[in-house]
Image (tube, rainbow, N blue to C red; front, side, top):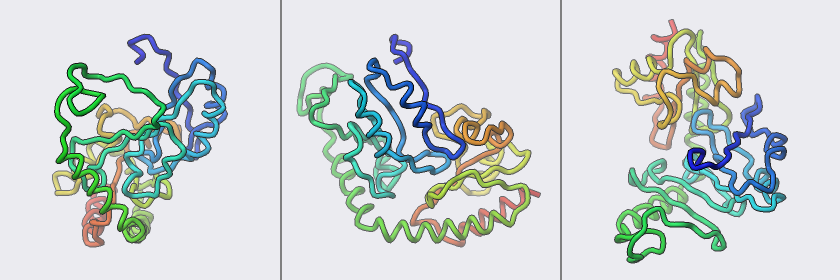
Length: 260
């Protein structure tokens, strides 16, 4: 959008990890047409106050709110009333990789990215992938039929992991009270090296978001803690209802090896 001539403003993050609402208010002029934000931070797990964000944006003459709810849908109870558009991807809760959903209010028009025959959709030519759509719906139904049970189980697993991490020297916890995401730093070891070492030992973790540049500091950890070394050595551990305590024990053993 910036390359097309649109003015892009970035909203600051406070030391607690949330949006700086004063900064949002100061930048919310009548020229603003779209505010994009995330429901759950993919690195720290911070759950943002979308209701408050939406209420501020509604004071604007033209702005609409697009919420990226990828890390929330299927794991948390999400109220879609406080957004104009919501996007998410079902592979985060058991759906097919490569599919994505956009929910919008009826009064918001969309311009097709791909033009041609309308076929079975107003927004793009070609046939609608009914199988993928059906699988996404089924993934949502399964996730929300067990949402309380899954949340409570993951919270128990998270507590088990956090208690063990707190006993390891040179480990700093960066994340917040979202049981599904744990972000930590290991002193003097680059996050990319940690991810590589754990991967070599059959453990899947990630450094920053999937679309970020490797071997650079985490922008969100930098924004919150103002510590470049902490941001460079950070990585994310994702938990789910499929995670077991035995798997946590294996992870802790490898982290202890790294943190010596």
